[in-house]
Image (cartoon, chains in turn yellow, cyan):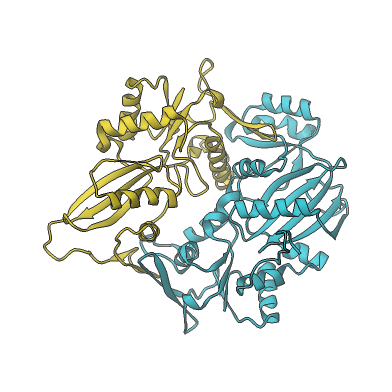
Length: 249
Length: 315
């Protein structure tokens, strides 16, 4: 069994799941926050002997961690609101933290490759703002723009690296499992820097946006929720290979 | 200079401030909950982060700080603080910018926000702990009362407690609590085997280890009501192998300063419950006299790590 964790309106994820199922990764179970609530039975165990996770979706359908061979995780928000609808108002802040902590551990315990593995900084991988991404990109030798932030001012001031009136194209690439780059044919040193950024940021599925005028390539942003449809058939093949190989993510 | 970020009323922060004075290292205290907030300017260029901090009419280059003690709690507490201080999310607060600088700057930070977040989910952290040679107690997190009853029958004595960084009192599951088990339906709750033994808090800092044993009959010695069992706390020296394992665990979690909660059973088995990423060490320093704040101040001032002998062991 394979697992897709995403919001119900994440068309990009739903498309990828459909493609991967037709690629032979079957069954590819879909689990959306709407289906993650108190009406399911949740059980998560951690002990010296091992770690396990299980959820009963219905009386006849259960997901157990030992059945799972790989996961694509694109959850943006903790499904905690489904649970809290029944809780006492006074307990909601406490319950919200408890439920988020539960889902981080539950998802982290799933075996096989997880794109992306949950962390304490985000359910679908570490979330960073533009200033942090830009700093990390510069540390892997990508060309970046200088950025400034100060108290009470707009979040990020940057200056365009290209001359006024230059013809600039924005391109998106996706790094999968730290080593495969899909989406656009970029120069080899840019490709290497993109893979290095995935490693440095510990993000197995990373979308990177670049600007180019044909000669210079400048980092323009990164996301842990790339548009998977933009990668087309090539991205489906790479995702299938990574999930089937069982490692590297 | 050492930058202390936190509440001036916090006893741990006060101890580090005093220890900084004792090693004649100046420190600047910024009260993150105070009324007069500083101005912060950050610049990122070619992977380097620099900037300035202006507080009470004085300006400080961020480069002049050798270390930062970030004592604002961890996980949700830190996030709540950012949220509170960011009345307009489009306009970053001084605190959120200082957190960003702490995350990225090549300065000693106790503790960087990202690494401090590891105990936001205690079972998540336990998954890391168990891969570093420590036994973790049998733990069940569920919203199914029937599974809890099975778990209780198996272990005979179990406790329940929070799994996030929200503080909660550890309580033993008794008949009264069992009668209320249906309440867990809407929130998976953590149950854990009750381990009998001596509690040991180990503080690791820059390759040094300070261990304090806590002997008590209380289930949670941190929160005692009147009439509760007595607590006897005293300094202990860990076996070198265990001390090394504690330091390695803190290193693996990228924590320059950690408070590791162990329990050692009468049979000598060592259980690890959690690693506190922003430990309230003053409780232990006050009772044992261990120079934890001094070691912390020395680290923040730029001192090198614990002395190693020719075989690589600690002296």
